[in-house]
Length: 130
Image 1 (cartoon, helix red, strand yellow):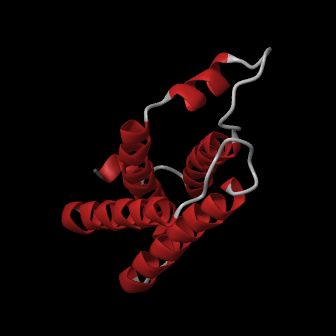
Image 2: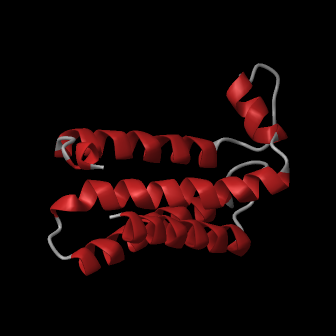
């Protein structure tokens, strides 16, 4: 685990922001395939709902772990946990709201709850491990 803490802060930010960009891309991809769309859109459109729900939990757990790792310079562990939770859940909530404006996508309260569950599981993991 020490090697994770030796990763330079700039690299941590880069890794976390790339992951955030992937989450945003997945969230704003239309849920309706059109002629000429690529494989990425096809995968988003054809992912079964139960898999999508599992992915909400897994992705937001990973996102919480990444934010906690990236915010290592915050000295107060409690403050870092709170910041990690609000940044992770804030992103998930904002993306769910945005999905109400994306063709073929639906922002739902259930998905927000799943994002919260994922964030809490990710934080639980880092609290137990670190």
